[in-house]
Length: 414
Ligand SMILES: *[C@@H]1O[C@H](CO)[C@@H](O)[C@H](O)[C@H]1NC(C)=O
Ligand SMILES: *[C@@H]1O[C@H](CO)[C@@H](O)[C@H](O)[C@H]1NC(C)=O
Ligand SMILES: *[C@@H]1O[C@H](CO)[C@@H](O)[C@H](O)[C@H]1NC(C)=O
Ligand SMILES: *[C@@H]1O[C@H](CO)[C@@H](O)[C@H](O)[C@H]1NC(C)=O
Ligand SMILES: *[C@@H]1O[C@H](CO)[C@@H](O)[C@H](O)[C@H]1NC(C)=O
Image (cartoon, rainbow, N blue to C red):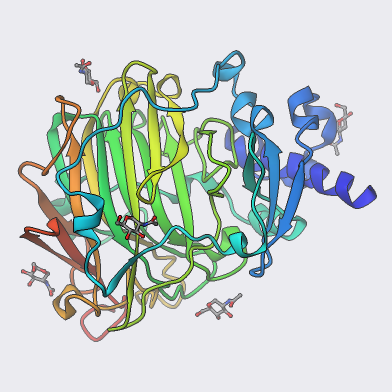
């Protein structure tokens, strides 16, 4: 009982600290429990807890007690259980996964040790050591970003990139987009120091590249500072103010409404692709349900994870104006200004092709007909092509695809 109480206490602390970047600056130790006496917070006692072999504890929390409902805009929100429509795609799932060298991955490692009952959602427990690690980060939420494709030229000619983010991504912009989909190859890139990360994702964005940028991200990442290990994990992120004070990873703040009792956000993805061995992929689909006024997230062929209520956003309230698919690396440039050895994707350049380089394929957008379509006028950029690069391709089975990634530091990237 004491242990259980202590854990939910810890959960409260991290929720308040990580979520509310604006008020705390991660001064976790000066937080105290009298801050909020929200009954839903106090009720977030798990119905069941599952110990995963990677060290994670997954708490099955009643769906109505999830973090989302702490959000002031969602106090009286009625949970949607199913979308009002599902966008049809160009590729049947079977056609796009009939290659015997490719396997679809939904399995989350913790599934080996149990499942969450109906009417609960799995939440990865935040432990005391997570809080201590997180407390040394100045502002967690600001770590993510999205690169403005238009800025690439200027970035390459200026010596200092202000934010140390490097991207290699395909993108479309200029139309009204109501969603995006991709099949994403999963790897475990090496991350040089805990404060760096490597991710592979879909970005959906609207608004201008200033403090008004709205964005939704979903994909996989390796982020030791958040999780305490180098595992590849499923993640989501949202922001309404260009990653300044709104939004966060996974369910660490209120906003995303989870409906699935199968998928834990932030959980380890397993198995992973091996160099010229079996390639494992995850499928991500995000789309706007105009009737319900939410953005749904689907994982795998048919698992609905949950949704972001459109009311969380300003520009993304109706549609997106930019979609990106690709990889991102955060470079702390800790060693005498040398480039990080943190890898993107498989850690190999696009030229190595299938088995060697990482890929995103069957890139599609939901257009104003509310169907999945091939992206029009797709283009690609890499902020430092000598470190991480990207190539676009197109074929019948793979549709629009990219090979992307790289090793980071090498003789041409220092
Ligand atoms: C905890 O909250 C109480 C009541 O608001 C306040 O008086 C106290 O200073 C706080 N403690 C810390 C360590 O912030
Ligand atoms: C997705 O569908 C394909 C074809 O129906 C199937 O082979 C594959 O196992 C499915 N993947 C998952 C994760 O269910
Ligand atoms: C994660 O990777 C780094 C660098 O490759 C290594 O130094 C560290 O020991 C690893 N951490 C864990 C928990 O395995
Ligand atoms: C699409 O979003 C933009 C704002 O980002 C808005 O101005 C426009 O009216 C929206 N289109 C529709 C059809 O609602
Ligand atoms: C990056 O990829 C592009 C597209 O394939 C290619 O033209 C370019 O030469 C590559 N750059 C480097 C530095 O390898």
